[in-house]
Length: 273
Image (cartoon, rainbow, N blue to C red):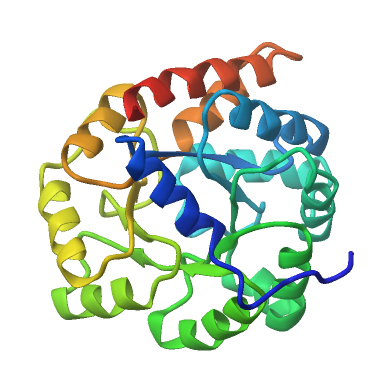
């Protein structure tokens, strides 16, 4: 891969949120685990999600100790690792999709794989692969500045997370430092499908928007069209749907994973519009 990053380019993520806002809807942001069940299928699902209305895709890199992930995504990571998926192969796959995948892709990974790869090298290769940003859920705010600067220099957004338990002053610092969007975790705990959203998410969205003009996307626990509609009504700029989509892929008949992912994405897009 050759580096074609341009530190002066406008964030593709920001462009997408601006476009979506102009259209009077919120950004639909599905999450899937790279390599589950294999990278060939992941490749096809990524293109299908784009075709069915996804605005931004969050792509997980499988890791053996995913602290922020619930059972559904942990099992997906385990299956992906068993199929031979590695961070280098994920980047290679994205690079091969550059001409087809035109919406922003945000890579979701953890600190250890990132540090083992090397921050500079990772951001260089991620930018060359055509990604727009990254999320590192176990990266403390105090350590985010260095990575954020490196990522920005490669034309990438480092997206930071805010949780319901985050103190107000710290929330302010995170929302001002996050690039692309602020990732609001809707629950206290790990990812997973949940039947309802806590009403305090509405006040959290409002609070974060009072600190920064950066868009706010809600994730962790959004499992269907009704919850996408709810966070839209609450003023969010984006909805991230992970475990529910990963379950659809897991439960699909062999060979039907791409179709099932696309049908679910289509339903979610209607709710986001």
